[in-house]
Image (tube, rainbow, N blue to C red; front, top):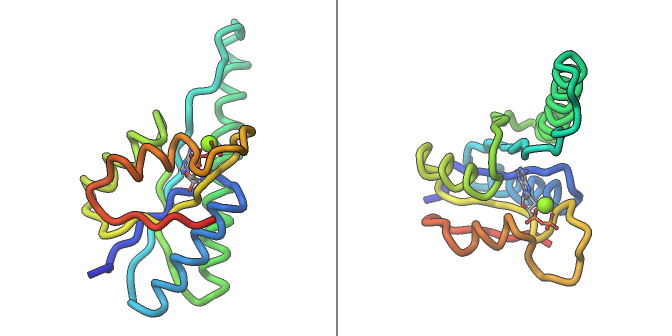
Length: 141
Ligand SMILES: Nc1ncnc2c1ncn2[C@@H]1O[C@H](COP(=O)(O)OP(=O)(O)O)[C@@H](O)[C@H]1O
Ligand SMILES: [Mg+2]
C-alpha cells in the first residue's frame, strides 16, 4: 500500500524527524523515498545589479541543495538510497501537485518548520497539505 513516500524537507529538526520516520517505514515496507525541497520566493525587489541578484540566487540554490544532500547522507548511513527533488514556488501547492502527478502513496512531514510563530500546532505548509492532500499524511512532531 505504501510503496512511494514523499518527504517534504525544509531543513528544520521536525522535517528531519519526518525523514527518520520515513526511513523506518522504508526499511519495514521496502518503500521508495523522495525528499523534496521547495525554494520559496525571496524578497529581492531592491537589488538592482543583475550580477549580484544572480550570485545571490545561485548561493540560495546551493544552500537549499545542501539540505537535500544532508537527507541523502542520512539515508545512505542507514543503507537506504533515496531520490531528491528541488522545485520552486509556493511550498504547499508545489508539494500537493508533485505528490498527485507522481502518485505518491503517503506524505511524511513535520508539524512545524522554520517559522517563528510557535503557538500553532501546524504551520502553514503542513496545514495546507493536511487539508488538501488526496493521499494519507503522517505528521511528525
Ligand atoms: N519549503 C519547503 N519545502 C519542503 N517542505 C517544506 C517546506 N516548508 C515546510 N515544509 C514541510 O512542512 C513542515 C511544516 O512546516 P511549516 O508548515 O512551514 O511550519 P512553520 O510555519 O513552522 O514554518 C516542515 O517540517 C516540512 O516537512
Ligand atoms: Mg515554514
